[in-house]
Amino acid sequence: MAQENARRGSFWDVGTVPAVYPRLDGDRTADVVVVGGGIAGLTAAWHLAEAGQRVLLLEAQRIGRQVTGHSTAKVTTQHGLIYTDLIERFGTEGAYAYAEANRWALEEIAETVAQLGIDCAFERKDAYLYTDDESRRPELEAEVVAAQRFRLPACLVEDLPVPVPHKLGIRFSDQAQFNPVAYADGLARAVVQAGGNIFEQTRVTSVEEGNPCGVVTEGGRIEAGAVVLATNIPFGKTGEFHKKARPRCHVGLAARIAEPFPEGMFLSLDSPTHSLRMAPTDQGPVLVAIGDGFKPGSADPGAKLRALETFVREAFSLQDITHVWWNEDFDSIDRVPFIGRASRESENLYVCTGFSSWGFTNGTAAGRIICDLILGRENAWSFLFDATREPHGERQRGHDEPAVQKDRDPNTLAKEEAALIEKGEQILAAYRDEAGELHIRSAACTHLGCTLAWNGVNRTWNCPCHGSAFDYRGKLVHGPAVKDLEPVDAGQGRGGA
Image (cartoon, helix red, strand yellow):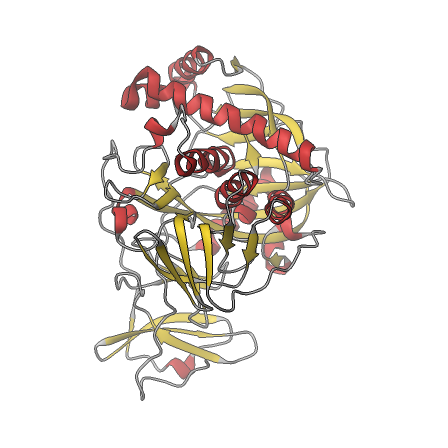
């Protein structure tokens, strides 16, 4: 398969020259601390800094290079079959607020790109949702009626300009796409120009609510009037958002194809779903394809990637695959993100999470809502996204247990082989890297102790319960966990650090 020779990692880093921000070193004070350097955190930080707040933004890794930088980067109000569902769950007023927030966010991103002069390949494109199942026509017709009711540019189409099987679809006109990493870099520069401070490679380990709040990091402590957790899923117990939002993963690839890619952005309604768009590069356009979502630990990511490559080969004249990657988002159980105060008791702690893979418009709206709440301004959409609401849906339940091998000697692992190995009362997460070094850590997630599952695409250990991820050395990639994996007890096997 062509993907075996592809680069592991997001396509969106190609050609970008990011600024490098320092680690936090020492104690600080601030009006607002924003934790998380993705679209939501950057947008909130920028608006707050522009309003005169002393803002510190903390990113555990690199700005814009986690969930934000691993997406298809569609900037659209077309979020699948959602508006009919929102009317049923939240009534017309709630569904209208969702549409208005996302429509505003689409135009806000367009204006921000122009205002700040961000070179992020921003392009207006139509967004299509399609099906090959004629029996789904009533669903699509109802969705068009609902979307048009909220003044969204939707219409039913019988023929789509894409070479995949389809019977009909929905077109949302004048949507957009861009390079998410370049856009995030532009927002980060704007935060600094507005007087904010950014620190990378600075992981927050705990937040103490109060007045002021205390933010504890590996490099120092910050006292702040307000704290915003924009970390994909909030860490800590406040709000229990790991029960209100489900982790969902997908694999992606970037490929060169022989024929011109059709104009537009495309999402299939039928399972397995596929998301398709083109991206301009100096060497010509590249196809960006995302596979169907799945719960971490419930499927083999490598098999998902092979299936995605097969789909692309059947639909296009594939020349070569340049990049393969993995991403993880969190789906709100009632399809509406949680944005606002972390709990009814929280006065100065704010969250934004559960974007359900539509984080560019929802995350941009989240930045505005959070800013308005902190500054005491009215916001017409905050009632819908209220993070303290009891969600209209079934809470997180159960998960598949990963396969564990009993009493295997970790030293028998081949290069690039991983295994969960039961040794006495402990389960080991063991991996031998391509250089032959053996890495062994406890397989218990440091969030709530669930047994981790191996992800060969990303070379990470992923939690099937609540979505935490750790690299093969045991270093935390993202939460809700806040600590690295524990080393194994002496005598449980030899391994690298």
